[in-house]
Image (cartoon, rainbow, N blue to C red; front, side, top):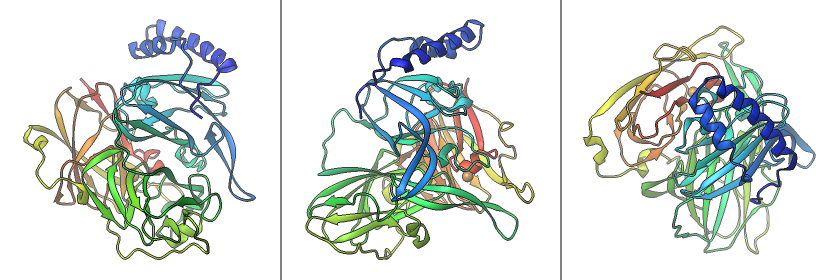
Length: 465
Ligand SMILES: [Cu+2]
């Protein structure tokens, strides 16, 4: 799966694209574009080639989802690189609409980041390709996914199968586990459900962990005494998910791929769209269990996987967790962060819906304005910024800052420190504060990762001056 692609016809397409792009750069457009073209002109084979194409995914025997996927598999190939290594990835778009792939959680240049709002090039339909070439960092559990617009096409953008795991391994990995598993929580076949008061919500017909509904596909096979490291990603376009494994607890070691100051045992893992959790489970209760969504309707629609101990058979067992105990601040440092001593520039950001009338999604505003009219915030390199999020709505919002890692500071009045993330779930009607150092010059996108919110104005840019 990790072998370089021979790149026969693809290489030709790429060169043709490059000529077109090179022409545009010569016509006196941005120097970023010119740099990108130069980087892409290196004639070495790519380390990975990702082909985006329509795909009929069988989520249970005889049950298919018509979607698009990377290289005819869901999730896409696991991309695994050592921190600091230079990686080249060709993305070939074989669909009928423009597409772009974002490398979520990496600190890379804007032009390589895979967000057109930051100036990254889009792959044209019917064979257009882009080479992404960058140094892989920071270490940790990252992911890659399409970064396009869906609107009312609830099979496009993050509603699709266009996502995959991207693991950047640290220079030294102590590997204190016996088995390592990558699990993506995904919802399929979205449709719009109108609530009684005229608001519109996205619902789903099916759900999976990786590519299969609960009860289909292979179980996770374990042995008593094993320590299993789970890398869990919520790749859903819009839904928050909480999972549990009856009889077991999760030792949370990292959030969004970043090690937490205080690893703690919890009964449930809660993830907003785009969030990741690394957790170790000690397999100490032999039996056949369901690792699944705690919401019975979502579990029945498929979000679960069977965990089977060696020499154990029978019907998989589910029981509800005794408590929903996952809170970010559990994993924070107990001593105040040194970073708080620096002078920070405060950026207040208030989020509010704007009812657009019956039969449409809400529009979302940041400080009263919707993308593309939102205010661009200026950053000075090296300075530390405190983002103060005020959620004036009854929705939770998984807000994402590209190209940077921020530290959680305050969650609805509770102080914390030391937890580094790139997505934070904003509780309803609450204030959340994070801080980050402006250490990666280039245009930086900030948006809600809930696809319908992002598509309806919940997006803005930070720009280094
Ligand atoms: Cu949102």
